Image 1 (cartoon, rainbow, N blue to C red):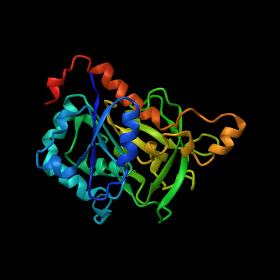
Image 2: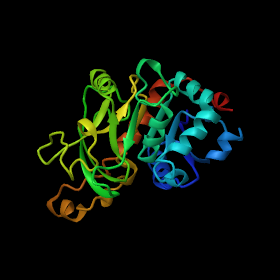
Image 3: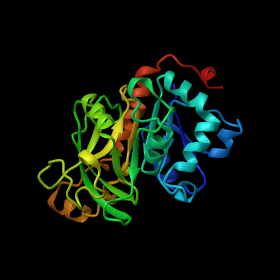
Image 4: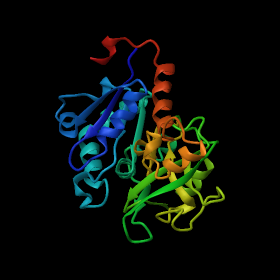
Length: 275
């Protein structure tokens, strides 16, 4: 069976090439589909196992990052997205994709509450400026997230101006209680931190990514698709010199986990199920 991944493109989104490369390398058949082709029904999300909201600046972020994109999805594809979730398929949103997912109300998805109202947000960075840097993340081992299984730590790039994770105290407590935090920004001692620049935006509880209670819907601000090759790392020359250059970039594991999960959990699907 061929795992099929849908990467939504168009209107200021700009990480499609590396996201496709990641899923293709992991054995998925990956299609880049313009948002308009989904909204007009030319292509259906139900032809796919994995749905991806990529990074970029959808609709120029003029009304706030992810706002216009989320509204188009909510009013054009709400029922389809709900069915996609109920079919136990996977959704990942990266950077602008994460912002879109929070605007949609896809996350945190507590009590199966999807696409009804927004309860968390990604706000302007405390620094007041766009940050393009690398961060170190701890992966929460109690999280149910499918995408981060077997990963303890990630070093990946960030590039955003609106990345500060915020929520009211009640929602934040529920997220923590249900182990929905997947990634936290850490300092040089591997401790979660609010200190800049290790926490590049001031996110509450150092949160860099969360999932829903099923672990199948995942949003994160850092860019794993930007660390697929060991040569993406800014210190690859030093790593090679001292003999610890990895065989692949650390971000690749996230995409491999997703593809493997589909293979393990959709073993009986035939081609007729896709068309």
